[in-house]
Length: 452
Image 1 (tube, rainbow, N blue to C red):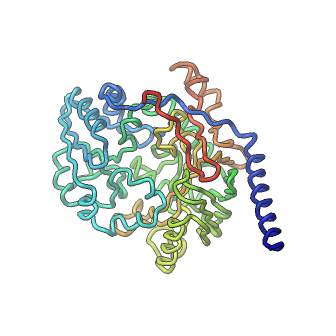
Image 2: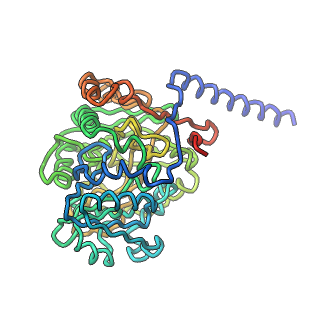
Image 3: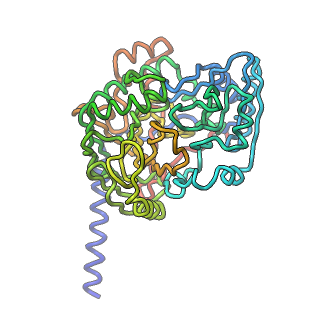
């Protein structure tokens, strides 16, 4: 009994000590805050931003902004199986107002998955972000039922086919295709969608330029993430060949791809893979704490993570002897291949949180081969997204590009000058949402709706 009491006392002391260290470590972090949150239930709440989106130029280049670039006389198809009806209605109304013929098709999601084939979505079984639910239809090839249909349209919204011509589908690759991050009405109505294009593009480009020409990147956070990797000319040339060609149609390092800032190369490694350290995340509380240990550019050990962690272990074992095509320097699917930064300071509780400025997204797997070749487009991608929302710090050659969750480019004098064209720079460049986390579960504590 006495030994048991002593052991329990030691365990309790250790737990208190760990909690105390976390509190001490977090004491200098900026306090949580959130913008006013209201339920969006009426067309007039989303129609203004829908009008912006249908007119905004089609581009994969502008930060977290989406644009359909519709023109009078064009035809739009909305694949609305995973889009809220109010969003589909708003996009259709906004498009029809400018003389665009619009059709909406919705099919049962289970039926869609069956039609697309299990291999198309094989990675979903192992992807921790599956806990978030699929965000639109993403496929290597266009399902046959849709392939015939889309030939009558100029733009397809709600389906994103991937290949060397990113965002282009159809027999002649002349049909614009996009998934949709604003599939929920609350997201479509948010200030993140209407954020000035010029300002967000400047933020994204400046972040990109500080990032892509760096040599050593170091990532840390209060949860225990401590991760280092290098960039070199080999990495940059790979980006030109993969995302540069796919996004711009030319070998270019001038601008980032859309939505976030990341090279997204194949894989995210130098000529001599050196990514190393530990990545710790709770995926905003959707999974238990998971620790991924990285050596030589690939994940070599997994601890925790509950079911998601076990699925990742299973996948790593299952494919450990498989050599995927492309730049992967060896067999397996643990290769680091994506490290991205959000750039939009107005992303709020409606999300998507990984787009918020200063939030970090890292991924490993074997997804990027299709940037080089369309010859084998149905191989499972095995791409695993890991998100880091708890005050990450991102240093490039010793200079903080993100400081405890704050994107430092927002403080840049040129960025502030451009912001002044659209309003108060202090307000426009202020990150509206600093999430509050439950310390025990790691889940985000979302603010209540004010119009309930």
